[in-house]
Image 1 (tube, one colour):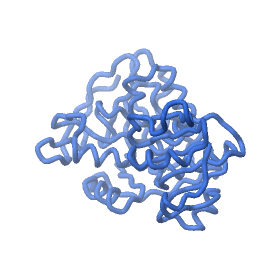
Image 2 (cartoon, rainbow, N blue to C red; image 1 turned 180 degrees about the horizontal axis):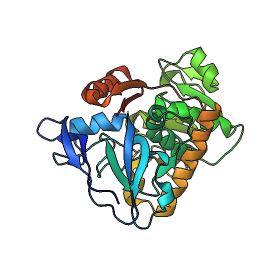
Image 3 (cartoon, rainbow, N blue to C red; image 1 turned 30 degrees about the vertical axis):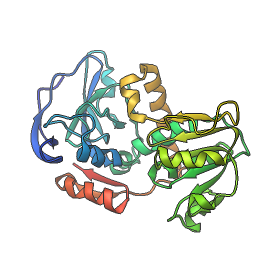
Length: 315
């Protein structure tokens, strides 16, 4: 274990619902932990939304940020020393100090190895959307040739569309902004500009808008179909009992850190590593993120929120 390090971090200010730059000090690692020197941190909607509303009651001084990428510089007693100097990216727990800092401490099983040819900026941009997309696809049994509907086309659903296509599904999308060029690149079968235009039924529907909107889409499911809510969950079934027998699914990536078994986290990281390899081979399209200096984190948060463009900060 290296000596304590003073480092720059962006800390939550509960009185202003904002972040301020301050100095932090690394603590001693637990036996199964690693210390990562961050090269970049990705910004996701959960970051600016939680900073603004603080649903988890963060105290002032908490370091936000779920996505990051960097180099392992120290390990706990039960962690293989060979991991030191490895390049990794990660999705951090919401209740622990996160990626908006020069250093982050994580459990050793909760990082993904990244290839040398992958930039840290790109690596920091992918964990949350990529892993959420994979979890969403895993909710539904593979049924090659069936049609599915994806509502929304943000970072998560751009990955999701491609994963579903790889599994043999025909994918339609609801998106007001998607173009035919986007459809061709991602392999989308048909674009609907709004849900009222949908005139088909589907084996599964994936929604990243919210539970109320997802509920409106349930009537477009075939009997024994699947509705996957990526942002919030449908609390009560829309279909009456003993009718279409719809399966309701909830996606909550962050919850795995608190409620998931260690093996489940390890398996998720391995799936993420396989998908990262696909990004590097070109089998998964990943947009290049807009990049800001870490000194500009408040501006980067605003840019991500207002421009709806994947954004990272570099250290």
